[in-house]
Image 1 (cartoon, helix red, strand yellow):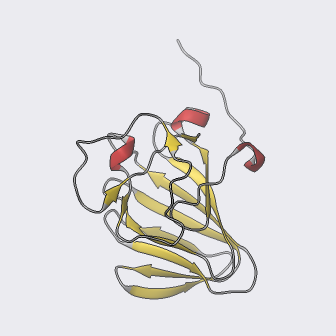
Image 2: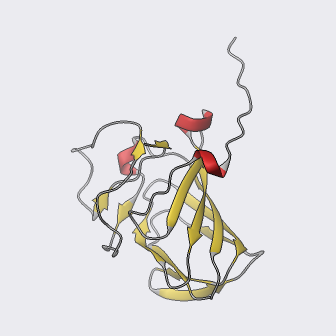
Image 3: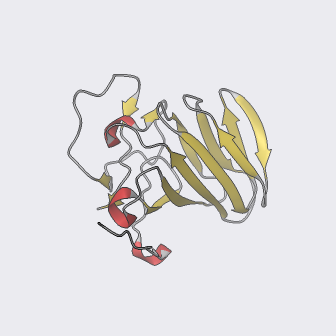
Length: 160
């Protein structure tokens, strides 16, 4: 019988992913921790920055604001988020986050369940200023059979 072991991942062990705006760190993933039901990370968003609009066709997203003042757009409606608040974003709901404060915002996120293939887990619906080629989540190569709704591009694994 195979025994799973707990895994602690320090923020310093992760690489920044700025492709969608902000600094998104995938911390506990199938690749980094052996998770099987979802993955967790931390978004660091500087004043004036945003994470571009996207949706998850297979996963709910749970967020918890640790620090900072955020606004979230959910299918076009804006809501304020402050520290010590959590939010559940249902499957297929378009969402984007903006730091409207004057300090760094920190937001913990968890997505689950995992998509059938990593490339199907995330669909971008807008281009951000930071959408330049950069680090991607590493699990497999590009999936050319993914549906053509926006830019399916999330990799629920470790960052290269």
